[in-house]
Image (tube, rainbow, N blue to C red; front, side, top):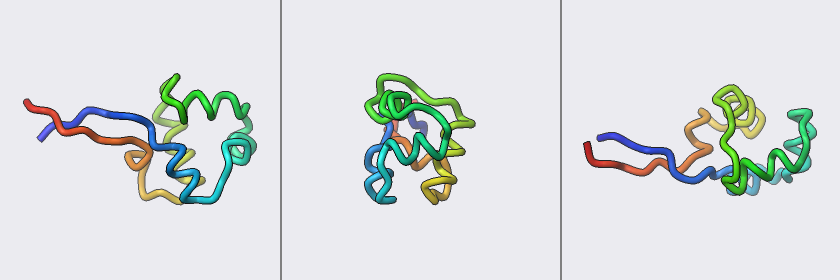
Length: 73
């Protein structure tokens, strides 16, 4: 089965980690506004950034930052 990437689940993952967008931004040394763009699906993040965020949030892999939607081949 094939999948396509759905919405970014960053807000959910931050809530689970009890971390704010500002705290994540500080750890990444970027603006809170940039984190908000990713969290609200206004801008995609690079794979490198997704891996860094997954590591900070203690996720198994960066795939857990996204909704995965099954598609028909």
